[in-house]
Length: 210
Ligand code: Z5A
Image 1 (cartoon, protein in one colour):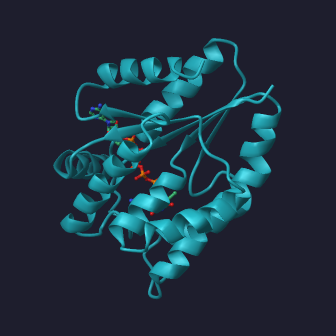
Image 2 (cartoon, rainbow, N blue to C red):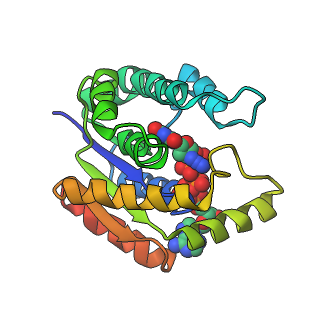
């Protein structure tokens, strides 16, 4: 039996990592085998690519390289981790996936979204999530949560987090547009409210694919 594939998407600070982990733990508590992974990353080579795209550097990737790096990371994690887990009948919970490319590099950076969808089809060999949970937060909430975290962990914003206000508005609108285009795959949850409420929304969304 083929497993189930769930992705978390949305702007930074929406709680994707928090809720992906919580969901994976809840599914394990039900006795399911769960692969918890993330993008970019999820395999050794893909984690190396993650470092390349996120760090501040003197020669940052131009937008076209950025696209290809994210897609290279995705091709690795799909072929070497996600597809094998699904074939074993496991549940896969992934923190970001294809919709992040459409939102960040497409709506955010201005690359043609239709072209990105074709390139993504090549990288994933057409793999699509059974369910995508979009944790939606407005840019001011996103900024406040990131600032709080940076303060608590004494870190600074990475290369993508530091993009300007307009970029972050286009990004959020882009995610919402993607959700409007595929209502049967997406569930949009307002993630600016209390954590427990978001958790309940996530579990309700997952009931759709059980
Ligand atoms: N990227 C791309 O451009 N193209 C692509 O194709 C892909 C990715 C796949 C990955 O960074 C970067 O790569 C990302 C997109 C780009 N750009 N940036 N920047 P990442 O994976 O390291 O970071 P992220 O995905 O943006 O995650 P994040 O910043 O860690 O946010 P999050 O995972 O959504 O949130 P969190 O870590 O669970 O929570 C953030 C904080 O808010 C934390 O302190 C929580 O305790 C708090 N939190 C969470 N929920 C709540 C609620 N409900 N109330 C109050 N506080 C909360």
